[in-house]
Image (cartoon, rainbow, N blue to C red; front, side, top):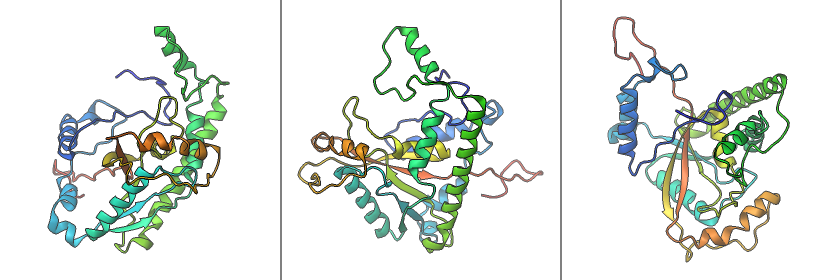
Length: 292
């Protein structure tokens, strides 16, 4: 599959399928896994579809015996979500608690600002050379919001330092996730984190001011799925007239709030973020997996 920035392995690209129902995503995933992609792609771990893990969540009896626990990231400390997104978060929290699941606040260390800084470094490794090359093939001008703007290329030593910083951040985040076992009441860390996809429900061209609500997942190499929750309602979602910005980017994002509130029919979307899947241990005498 063609890709830009090929050869950069610090933050890998992924193909994100779009579907109208969870069942459609399930079918697609099962179809892909049925081809045993790990036999042909060295970057794919051997993790086949696990019916027992699915039933632990989808079966109402199993779910009643083992409630889930979630964390919610209502504000990442750098940029406040617009009112429709904040309302979507509250709706999901209320729905989860009504179903008997635990919901705690997500206050991770390292901060998402630190993860965003790592992402910015990785995307600048080549000083934008690859992006300029691909734009040059068509003769079109680079997009105004191009992430990898022209800058000095990183040295091999600099890249290694960034990768060490990223690895430590992943380790620290993993340990924070583990520590939530003390807060969930289930004896386990949170099963997933609910967070905004972006601070706005709709962004104007060249006004996508903030990426960190999604880029932190890329840096951590976690699993994420985007779910539409509700639609913008200008009669319900009102701009906070007493808003106080954390910084210039936060203020710039809030300045686009009126557009977000009047984008009729636009979905307010959230992400369900989970840790990396675990490999299965296989019994040497059987083809089927021995455990979950």
